Length: 228
Image (cartoon, rainbow, N blue to C red; front, side):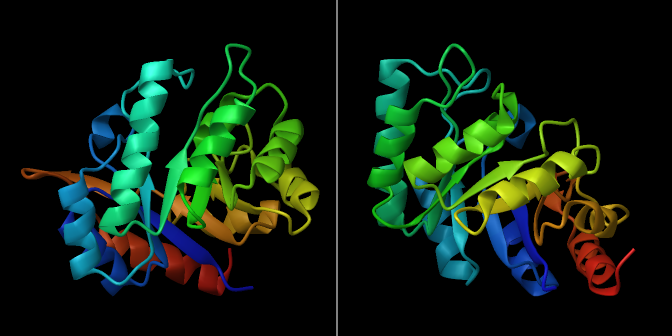
């Protein structure tokens, strides 16, 4: 089984390091200390100029819950338009109703705004009351994949639910396992869940701020290549 690894990047340097270390895709964010917010147009352009990896841009204009106001949603749509034109290969977003269910209408509009680029329903998915029902909604919306820990604090703890989601997906949508994915547990997550797409935030704190740990990327890829 070939394992696909997506890593979080917050800068041009992160993206270049991710490519050099062997990652397959990046999720580009700013304000990682707030859980990751929408990157600027300038950053997306600079990363695309420096790095050949597919770039998924976060569409999240504030921290907090995933129920958004009408004004906030218009900002999300505008950001998709701007970042699509800047070269983003896809978008990660999450929009929920007050009940915690997926906001079908708004999610559908974001997929339409992506104009055929990849769309990821991010870990807002893990706040939904029924994971299997939420997956079916994401399929109907037209998302490329869901990013989930299996409704658990970590992907390892949610491995059984991830396996259920992978089975429910049945090739209709991709399941991307995320949530405390590390070199030490990645192979076990793959073994228990059966997923072959992983999302990892392998950032380390430096004097310059958060930076991608390229050695951790290499170690994680090596661990899933050799098995647990």
